[in-house]
Length: 271
Image 1: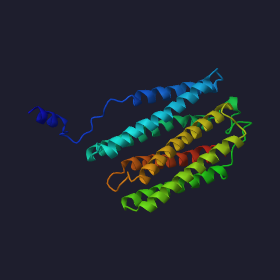
Image 2: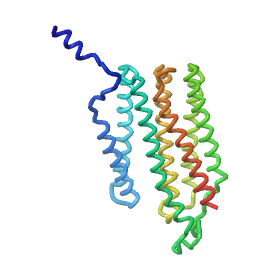
Image 3: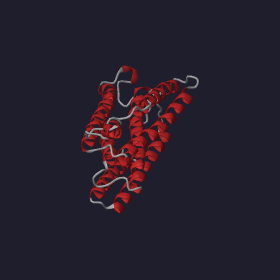
Image 4: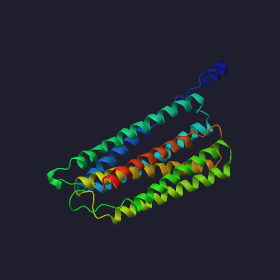
């Protein structure tokens, strides 16, 4: 009777996943807070600001690795991600992307300054002394690259659904290559720009908006690399590939945000 009672208690009688206690949410929050504090300290030239920023960023990357490792183990090897659990995860990713959209709406301050430029910046936009970037050079090229990466990640999704492993690997690899090229061009553009973050309202809004977008591209690239490793190890199937779906949704969100930035900041705001 004792053994039967123990077996009965160990059998899960519902399709939901009761997550085990984990330290990673707290550590991730602490790392993100360190990044924010270190970033502010670094921008204002405080001592050890760069060290705090770098330490928080490295700890955040480590936390991402171990947290995603646990989620992959729970879904792939322990079978906790049932249909109902995947539905809940989909709702969670959608709400997360909505919150990211609201975050980028904070940069509507760009329109406040550009539609009604003050006397302090010469009553014109772009402000006097700012040599803006040509939107039809690197920014337009980056737009084409990012849109093409959106096509390749969609190709990968259809290949996974069709159980075409070779096409899925090729398309996802191309997506990661395009994402890396985009990031490289973005860094080159920053290096070649004549203005910096401290150059008034234009420099601050430009670098904060495009810089945060670049960080989202970096995070999305890491997620796609994780999906590529899982795909290579036969962990993504026709029925269970929500990890890739969430990364693909996030990547399409990054595409849409970049189109908004290109039109508003590079093209309209720089003319």
